[in-house]
Image (cartoon, helix red, strand yellow):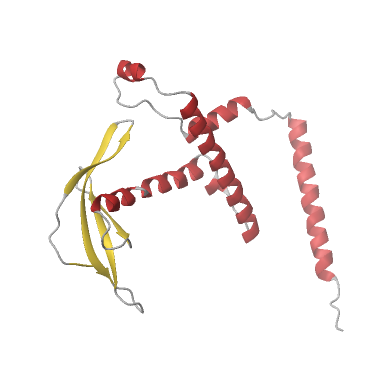
Length: 200
């Protein structure tokens, strides 16, 4: 990307976290991106520099008259998307699935999305019903009390919906039932493959 002006940094409070205000230095540049087989395109480059000096870069295709403050806010929204993916993997089990067919993966993705939506609704209802007490925050010497997390919701669900404890005999019967169903499914599939094709 070609830049055509000197970088001017500005300190911005990104968001209020449980550890206080997250701040970073931002610089916004207008430049051109060039990709093979495509015309050059004018875009915004938002550069973010944290307190350790590490930098991250975000390209935005917003109009030329977009205020820099808006560009900086938009570039910070990526955190929430990444946080959602991380919660889906670590708490909902999105990364623990293996499938041989695309439709099975679609089903798992749909269930993961539904679980994330349920968790988001639960967190929102909790925040509306139980406001965080400023006196408690002062007592604990923190700026912001923690909000309900995805891990909290999962722990609550595990507490109210305990998994049944199987005896060894029940576990063996369950495995045998699954194996029989799989054997029948395999047999049915093999029989359908052996049927002669209609040549007419």
